[in-house]
Image (cartoon, rainbow, N blue to C red; front, side):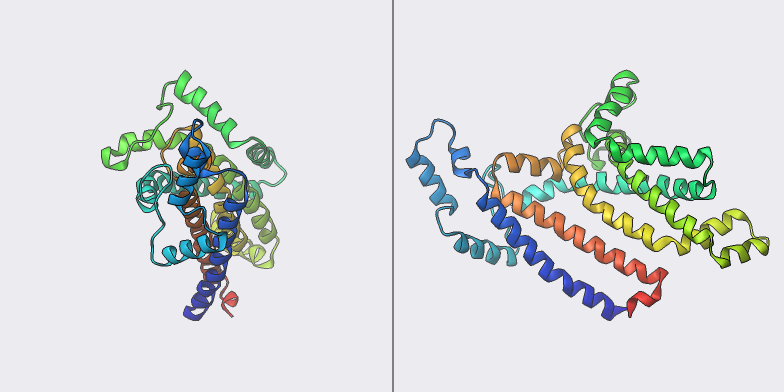
Amino acid sequence: MFLYFLRRLAATIPVMLIVAVLVFLMLRLTPGDPAAIIAGDNANAEQVALIRTRLGLDQPIIVQFFIWMGNLLRGDFGESFFFKKTVAELILGRLEPTIALALCTILIAVTVAVPLGVLAAYKQGTWIDRLVMGFSVMGFSVPVFVIGYALIYLFAIKLNWVPVQGYQPLSQGFGGFLQRLILPSVTLSVIYIALIARMTRASVIEVLGEDYIRTARAKGQVESKILFRHALKNAAVPIVTVIGLGVALLIGGVVVTESVFTIPGLGRLTVDAVLARDYPTIQAVILLFSLVYVLINLAVDLVYTLFDPRIRY
């Protein structure tokens, strides 16, 4: 198990290196000049050139890359062009809202989707199955920002149950923290509920046709025990896979959701940094998102071994 973990961990190093190179090149090769944005519309060419020199943007791309990589290996993400703070300080200040939103979203999605998928599989062909699958199609079809604005209109404006936008840190009280987090979390969780419920249904239906399920029923075991202890456990590998893959969608969804609900997290920071052509901030945030995605996929691979030990070898 430990050797399997080391092999998987070592495989993440070249992945992160490739991501670093691609992010750096894409930012440098796309149109737009951070120095011109910082200088403003009324700046002349000389002022823009001075800013480019101060930021090190006048050097060859290969030199800029190795300087950035050298600083990165020392744990120095650089200083933001736009916010005039260190990138590490910016990320730490925006980390709590994003982590809270992501964890709450995953918790809601898994808690709701897995039982829904099992129920749809058990009631295959009935109106319950069709209702769950209809909801899944809707979850995939409707964009996140549309769901967000619809929920804001219903629960925040019409019913006045929750605040419209904003974020309250957990340190200022759990009630206000949860009140401002629940609506964006539900908004973001809709697509994951749809994704996980469909996969759970398909996997459980396949398992329910196995001989050991018929044997368990012949022994008179309770149906709920058969569904959750036998069927769901043996269908867990593809379900865990889709939960892990959902992290990629979650990263994009966080950016949109934080913008809709004015949450000061990493997603909102990414949007602001892209608009300002803030290279150090964009590079650091994308690398952080990539690292999280790689580590979660590593965790998913390790979870596989709990359900199917053959995967270790």
